[in-house]
Length: 189
Image (cartoon, rainbow, N blue to C red; front, side, top):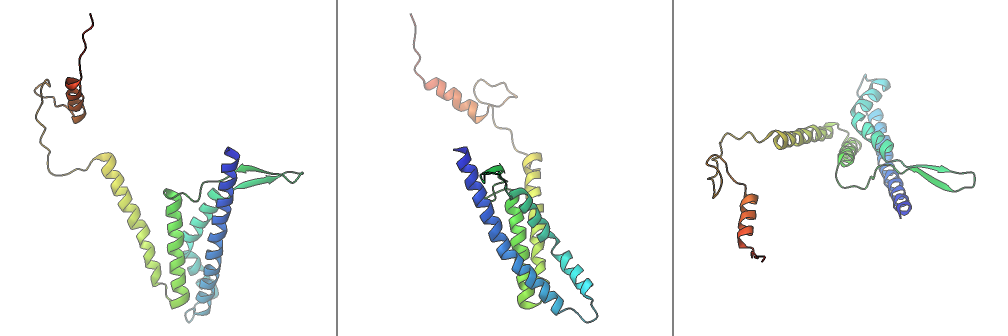
C-alpha cells in the first residue's frame, strides 16, 4: 500500500507543478513584454529588465523552492520500469510553509496581472501583506511561548480542602478527588 500512496503523491505533485507553471509562465512573459513595451523615456532595456527582475525576486524564489521541494525524482530502468527515488513534499497539504509560498506566488501573479492590465506597479504594494502577516504570526508565537505579559495580575485561587495554605489545586486534581469520593468502595474480607 505504501507504493500506491507514493505513486498517487507523485502524480498529484506533477499535476500541481504543471498547473502552477501553466499559470505563471504566460503571466510573467506578458508582464515582461508590457514592461519592455511601455518603458519610461530614457530607460534602457537593461534597466527595465533589472527592475522587472528585482520586483519578481519573491515570486521566482518561491517558485524555485516549491519546485525543488515538491518535484518527484523518478528513475527509469533499462527495462522501462519506473522506480520512485523521492516523491517530494506533499504539495496538496493545506497548512505549513508550502502554503505560505503558494500565497506569495499568487499575490505576485496578481500584481503582475495588474501590470499587464493597468500598466502600473502599484499593485505590488499588496506584497506588504506578507511581512505584516509574518510579524503577526511571530507576535503570536512570542505570546504563546513567552506568556501574554498582561498588566493585570491574576488573583490566586482559594485553596480547597486538603491543600496547604500556600498551595492551590488545579481543576484536574479537584475533579479526580471528586470522582474518587463518588466511587463505590468495596471491603475485602
